[in-house]
Amino acid sequence: MNLWEAKDIVRAHFGGTAFPTIQLDHALTQGRRMIETHANFWWMQGEKDFSLTINQDAYPIYTGDILLPNFKDARALSWREAAGVSYEPVALGDITKEELDVLYDTDDSGSPEVAVIDNATLYIYPPNPDKAYSMRLYRYSWTDNPVQTDDDDLLNFFPMALVYAALAWGYELELKDLQGAAYWKGLLGGTPFGRGGELAKMKKENFKRGWRDNIMFTPRTGPGVGSLRRIANLQIYGNRIS
Amino acid sequence: MNAVIEKHPNAAILFNDFDFTDELPGDTSLVTLTSTVTAVDAGGTAAASVVGTVSISGMSLRAVLQAGTNGEDYIVTFKATGTTTSQVAVKQVEMRVRSKLTGAL
Image (cartoon, rainbow over all chains, first blue to last red; front, side, top):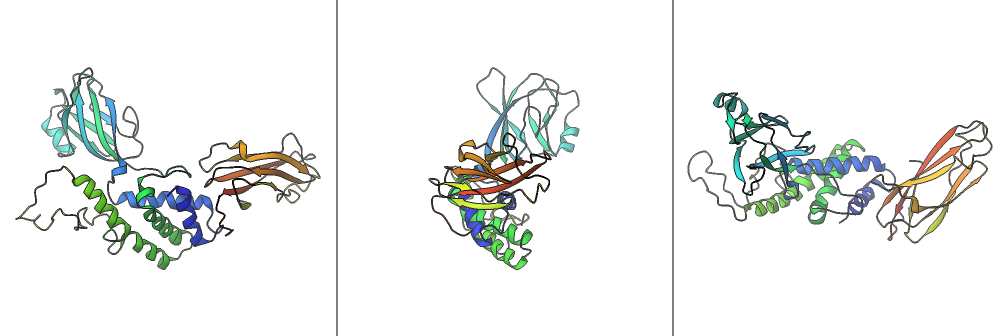
């Protein structure tokens, strides 16, 4: 389904001219954001190459060499010599910045070993890179709706998710119809929000794609015993964001 | 938006709904050279091909709206300049190009 078709479905529920197009565009933009808040979906994946600067530990995510203004989440980080051909992994996000600041001296030098993203800045440790290493950041980014006459994976495989999300936004903010908004939100994410509807289907598909080829361990004792990683488990992503 | 229309991609229609008498009360005619009709698509890219012949009749600025890509929503801007006051007034029409007309406007 192209974007204009999703637009026309939303329009059909408001009347052809009752929902101004500029508001409709906002509804579709915010609808996509509502969906992408719920999980890191496959269409949000990507990678970004950049270079370290000798003796510089901090790299802004949104600007500078990395320049990812729609950055959402990091998946992995690796490095290689500028003229090299093989990448080495960098431990990313396992340790907090305050811990790394204690573990490394401010004049420690060498190739990247550990990295952490604090707010919107990527910090490399040891904090004084001895060379201008080539880096590759694997990330998830917030995405924009495609142009009017085009589609993407969200519109291609789960178009009604975007339609329901836009309708929920429109009923709440344009019509001030909270009961109607709750109805469309229910179709989007069920109750509790995120455990049913289109979102549950999308998360299952997302999980299947991520699951393939991964080796996983299922805890049989301890506090994680109930969190079986199986397709039918809709709590895979937790319920903290709902 | 001052008007919304739906048009088939193959249709070429004379859009004659914009009279600027109320917006330019001190004028009785429009300046041909600076009264223009332009169009952009939903992404904001100029779409000159959907605007055909532009004409003026008294205080009305008219244009033939033509062609367009199926599924696209065009914003067509009519900019009128009064002959006496040189004041400028603007009206816009949203033109939805659909090969299957909904007829729901």
